Image (cartoon, one colour):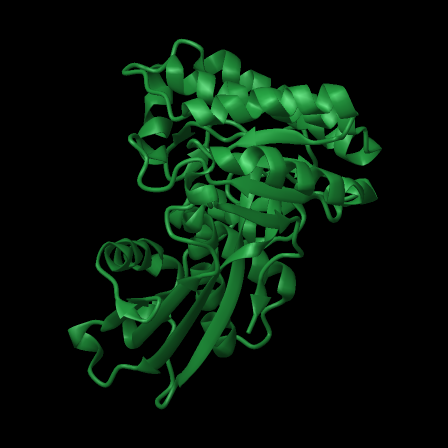
Length: 358
């Protein structure tokens, strides 16, 4: 049974109107989710860092429709311009979550959204975008139900965000978050859960994102997830992710950076290994991705710095390191690694505190 129940008929009062606005960040998985079943249910658990600066800002203006028999009118703008593909994805999402927000059928909506990071930069805009959208919808529902408590507000926001993009459920919370049923307390396939008791070194961990290649990927994440159904290593991978979720949770409490880096780098390479062993197989890493990894290993061996890589489902490289070593590591990145980036572009980010109502 779902942790969030579908709603009944919720009558919207005459004159009901207003505007809600949220900023919600993207996140980067440390234990990777790859493969799903049913209605956005993960095949394995994951743990992620919620970022601080790579955010989507979404505003929704709403008003009660005079003639509800016509159905709602929805206008969607992306960075101030009427959106095509972005709008279509949003319309599908609103239709999908309508059963959980019965009031939506009675409202006209104007949705305006923008990102603080470049489009096609390798930052998961679906995670930040869908979480921001879910939080806005929850704010409208709270206008109709002022007694709603905060725990329910964020749990339902996580649930709704997941229906738009699986990883979006993790962006509803700041810091370190887990999603997917595992040995961790209160873990769930339907909502993300914040991790507690983690070592202070991870509170402001840095993430410098090297933009190796911008643009649309040759194989989308949606297709990649689907190919896990016939991957001969899928069962072993799903168990590995279960084990690594438990291991990483303990490492995050201890603050052991060497163990953290070894597990996180292994997870990143395993993710791409699953792509290369799918049928049909595919590869999203580029030559410069591999070059960065080798340069990192050389630098770490020579200096002893605690800097590690993880990868998203693409060519770009996330370099993770403690804030106490940021000055030296960032100088090395500028001197040695930016040449591997498309147009020398990179993004400096860090673990963030989560979304914010504006």
